Length: 406
Image 1 (cartoon, helix red, strand yellow):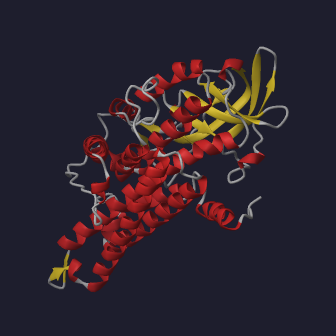
Image 2: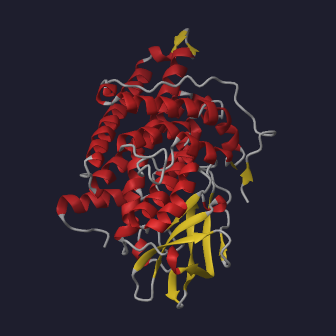
Image 3: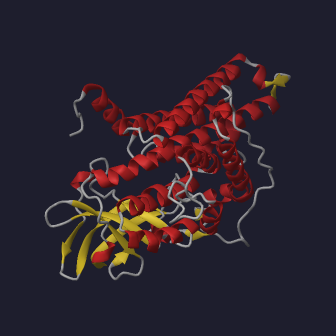
């Protein structure tokens, strides 16, 4: 099992988190007062609960599970779900995006925990589930009493989920589920899993699998160099008897899990922006304080060039996120538009992390600063929920009308 959080042994940083996000184009003017209040509340939460412990959690491969309940208390899980099922819900998509921005500014692994819970577990239960399923699971997921995971990727099928081998058979009073999933965030600690599998006719359906069902196991993935504060594992199904009432009844086919991924990718686009902001602010402060040749290195042209380019890219990404959030609120955001934002913003954040690391020199690889952690995390973010190249092909199909990956 992955190491678990222990208040007695975890090392807390004595550094004060003074982060303030850049806003070169006065994008705050486009936000409502509620948006800014939500952002401030989550930013304060990150500074208090995540920043002091995250470096030690990552260094020691510790998942701070105690934060799951706290995420629920502050309303980070599934905030766009109606209040009937989530007392902290009923918010718009810009609110959700700002939450993910702030959480990933703290750590990509923590944002992964929140994204999976809200977009990949709560969303399909709400959108595709029965009323009984919604009432049974969503309140407990929103509060953090339950932790969930999403089973789509398989050992032999990553970018081609339609080739999945996990399958289930109708046995009269139950379904019999067999197969395996891998690279599953939250799985080692999850109480439930939303699993995608094929029936006898080859049609993809979603099933809710609960921990404790005989034949269901969640082995931990070890030796990660990325997302080390996030728990990652497998889902293994060996003749698991799944009650028929656990089948998601309202949507089937590959479009069902793909709809969940659209929701998650939207949050990732905002989250990557938060990581980029943190690297930029760290580099800016460091160059103002680091003295070489008798003056701060911020006075040198190459350092200013890098900072100017970073701010330009962050500002463009902020505008992309805001406009995409407005389209989501209006129900108009397309899969291709979401792909553009996810691909662009993650690539942008990864490049800023790499440049920032160079600006800090040797200090950039240490846990004294967050940059190397962000850079390693973003390597995974560039891969999951559709790789960088797959998103290019999604956009290519949108542009030409020709699918290059089918």
